[in-house]
Image (cartoon, rainbow, N blue to C red; front, side):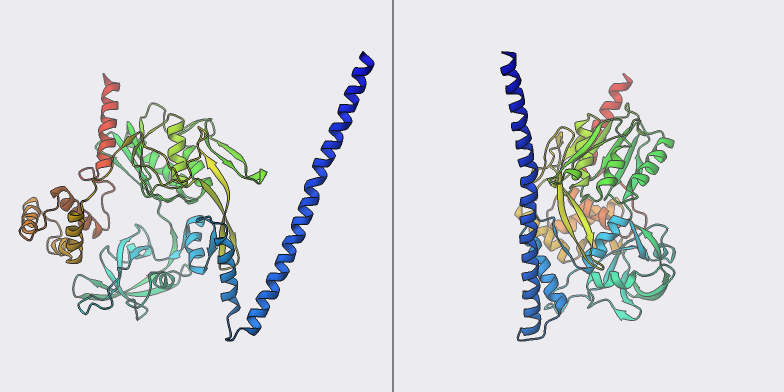
Length: 470
């Protein structure tokens, strides 16, 4: 009996060896076959490329063929986050991945103008805000100024990307911009470029007990800036904390992991899974936190919160460290790698991430614990809002009243009602507040009066703090 058992054991062992050998050999054969097939496709592509370049009825730039082929290749992946990056796109993305660039330190916008409208004003570049401490800020450029020319060249026919390229450059070099301030004050300013850090974090205290931190994206400097903000709030003796990642499109995976590590101790932050084994990773916070566990926390989210901001929100909620208030997030649970091809490159999805609870939120998003959002406007309200914007009523009112009083605002709302515009008072007042802040070089970080989501978060924390003191 024992002898038979022995033969069965040996036989099973041989069978396993054969199976293991077959399993080890088969992938190698398949890989070799697949590589050979890929090489044949590459050679065929090169032949077609050369044939088109040499025989097309018109002379064609090989770069155009190259870019077209790459765009088509990525389009076949049917993945909105994998795509070819031209020089402008690659440069813009590099600003986020490196966190800094050579420039003057301006956040700008350029309104679109109807070319068929004879009464349309020139489409100059508007300064949204100078970044505090940068060359433009020190040179006296103000929010609301218009850049009408750069080195004597009008900005009216330039795209926003062309304007950005002219303003950026080697640190230490200078650029002269022509500014229009108000309706008629025109003057030149020479600005010496410097290394500009992409601003990602703003913080303040709400009253004397609630700390507030807004994170706009995740760059290599974000975790350090969040840490700086937390230390400032600690000096102010904060007792509760709000983290705002609304409209935060994401950024670097390493950055959000290091940021989450400030709030979590020895807990899973995020898991990445890929068909490439080395891309599978469980990221865990180191032991210790910068924010004590007795500090209640709320994270504000909305449909513009995506990718890295969803990782932070998911990590804090799944680990029981914070509650989420706002709207359902965007739902981007994929990780991309960026490859450099000189002045251009591409992004390729290489993994998908899961929250600490194991959820894949791709195309689903993260639901808030408490849903709060701005009321939806009726079609009539939207029409009135468009009319208000097209006629520049809010902008003109603030230009005439840079620091409007309550009496002036109430009179303005009555005038609108006389003209048939009956938007909710709160909405009009919020638009006026936003326009006043837009022309302010140092606008307030928060607006508790008109930000419904923030106001709800403050009320929830007030209740929590009140319960702790009883």
